[in-house]
Amino acid sequence: MSTIRKGQIADLDLSSGRGVIIDENGQDISFELNEQLAQVGINAEVKFQIELGQEGLRAVAIELP
Image 1 (tube, one colour):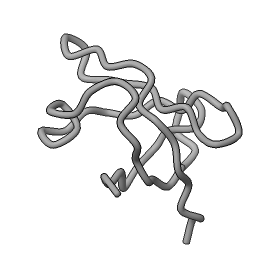
Image 2 (cartoon, rainbow, N blue to C red; image 1 turned 90 degrees about the vertical axis):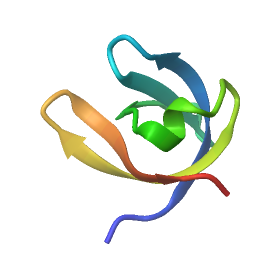
Image 3 (cartoon, one colour; image 1 turned 90 degrees about the horizontal axis):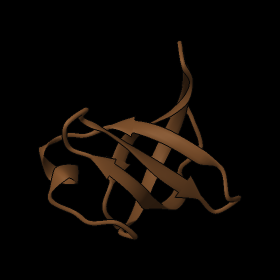
């Protein structure tokens, strides 16, 4: 099981359904928006796990603390 990371939402693109989280190490990690995440704003604190997708690392299992 992947380690839980913490970070902040840095970018949301509602038209593409994607966003970017910056983790505690300053790394940009993309994610797919869901209904809950589309309601939060930039700089919202989140907890998440990462997995390696076809386009690199992506955040999954994203939760609001």
